[in-house]
Picture (cartoon, rainbow over the protein chains, first blue to last red):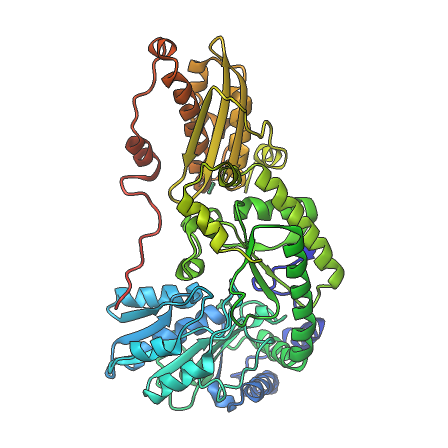
Length: 407
Length: 157
Ligand SMILES: Cc1ncc(COP(=O)(O)O)c(C=O)c1O
Ligand code: FES
């Protein structure tokens, strides 16, 4: 595939070194890690090494690392596993309103099963206020889950501050750190978390593999039952090739973290600066908050995201993503932008650009030019753009475009 | 997911624009995904001699408005009123099920432009049979009794 890939928050290509780490376990060392013969022991060795590598990076013990089929499973296991094992203690959980569907929809499903759920609001930058976390905790609260960094806007939540409050209250704290891995430190003690979800394919590892860190002493009921794999917390023959790939990917992500953040952050800033020069009436989401260095979420006023995304792909081979209502299965706007208080009409113009290791500064210039060009074309055919300028738009609607605008 | 015809009209939308001193303007919005279309028409001797539009919407919505402008151009008012969401979708070699509502938007915006014209030309209106539909009817036809948008999330506390 030629073109410019700017959708790294969706997924990343597998690093060649990761592939190299996986191959032996697909071929010569193919054994079942539970078998006691030499074939099995070799696979088990790979599994142990991978677990130790991950534990080293998270600052925990190997026994606290569970391998899963991806972060969706990790998030499910964290919520359902804790709820199910702690029924005696309470029946109330707290999550932020900007969580990934893996957490949000799981919480909603639990709600239908009788669990009480509090959804924490966020401010206009998408930040959770630790004081509101504290206020939401009740005697029967068993778990708080707040994501480390948001996949749509890249906003970074004050996880350590939230974690301290939650744990002081004697409540378990889970964080979905999928988007933070490779970009922010992952030490579980510094972050004050009891459970943490990670995914392989966001860090140049394979798809279909993830981790759930579970602090020693946390009561967690398995969701997948079967054999005695993963310390009886997640049954199923271990996917050793992917697990070895995950460990290698996380190791590389950690080694390259600071350098990647610097280089990619410079590109992101250059792209945003150029776009602000080229295109009036845009809004950089969450600009007032700490953001992941690779993520830029923009509102391109008067333009609908899906049409824009298609034009950018067709005419320029540039891949980005959008949370526009037209692209979602439910035809609803992004719950993240809703929670930030963005009016629907504006939220439909949301475009996410997420950079990665493979991008170059030249691509930023190309992308900025292409984005500005396609945005102008779509504005030329937008009735909202006309109405904004010819006075047919209601004053209140018109004002929204001026309020949510980056200078 | 889109047919070649949809892609063609999406990449090269025909007749985009506004008509200064239009004889009729129809604006229709979609309360669910927030999209909007505005049609402008010029009428001479009972025929649409110019059809232009502006569209804020997905790829399908853009293709629909472009196709409708082509279908309506040169038609009599009653012929243009007969253009339906179904006939547009057929002309486009089909639309994904999720995108059928975008074709409603286009047909409705065109019909509103014609209605706008007829409201100022009562004689012509009298000689034409207009389908009697209220805005609520149109909404219900399109989205069901209460719309099928995501239900507002129940938030505890
Ligand atoms: C924040 C976040 N959590 C969870 C997931 C789900 O991860 P996976 O694709 O490994 O199931 C993703 C990725 O889509 C994500 O961005
Ligand atoms: S206009 Fe929103 S889905 Fe087509």
